[in-house]
Image 1 (tube, helix red, strand yellow):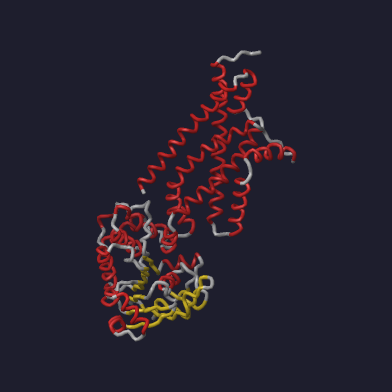
Image 2 (spheres, chains in turn cyan, green):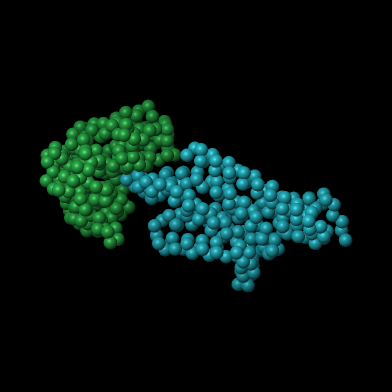
Length: 216
Length: 242
């Protein structure tokens, strides 16, 4: 049996952390892109579009992320589409992230007074001009803090990708544990690394929130 | 020739019959004050004139063109109808100058320089030239409302609709806003205002329209109608506000 020194354990965990970060970033970028599209669809006053968004949100918020990952990974391969664990993880995390972000952003846009839309309309601005010049600049300010806050959920969500065999922080932790039988030490370290990734984001989100509340 | 014409306008919110056949004809240069109890349909009437609310029966024309809530129609309408709101509705993320310049640049496609000249002139008119670079939140309510007036004027509207524009102001700030309105009235701009300022309606207005239960109950020359109301409802209303 191979001996693992503390240094080896830490080195392996930190190496795996890169994949956790990469997966989080990919999911976050994918999620925001899809959420932006969905938000635009929702803002058009087209009932069909709004319906589609509503079903999308309910579907992906109402089922466990792990099931979505299983379906993406095993389901798609059963249907004959070859998909890697990496691809399945990104795909399902994108669904998950976007379904929550679109709701968070809806809340932010709804907090803007109706009068902003009406004043724009009375000045002759079109729907898109109103969005671009009036609504988005204000909504982005309100939405930044909760969006950064939500990114913590995305990072923690990536841990589930270990179950479909994607080698990231949690998966490497499990593998090291199988080799060393030191679960307490290893999983404490794993948890600590997650904490170090998430805590600064939480702090930053709180900071943004405060900044926004003061300037209001 | 009438600038704003309403013919048998009916408006429902669900089962609630808010406007019950409004006939109203407003000529260019008139200053029309719409008074009445809350719930009498005054604000709804104003919002129908500029396409913010859909009416179900009858017809409204502004400057000869029919008013609907269709996007394109509303935008064309915006060129001839300006609107001032009770809550100002300035854009908080823009400076005073940017608030006034926005619509002329992106709707009328004026150049930045041209829009700025207009904006400065309009702010001068409402007595706020020095606030060009301030943000709305730094201004008092009265100043914010005057910026809103300048913003509407920058689109050179043919008629200005004012929806209880002094109601959200502290009493000591009402005067400065009314003074601006009075100045505009002297310059001959057409004003339609929903208001509780009876003195303004009497001294500056050219006509008072009293609304009651979704109908035009009584209307006429301000001095005559306010000192000698014909209907019991207006008498009662006058008793309540004075």
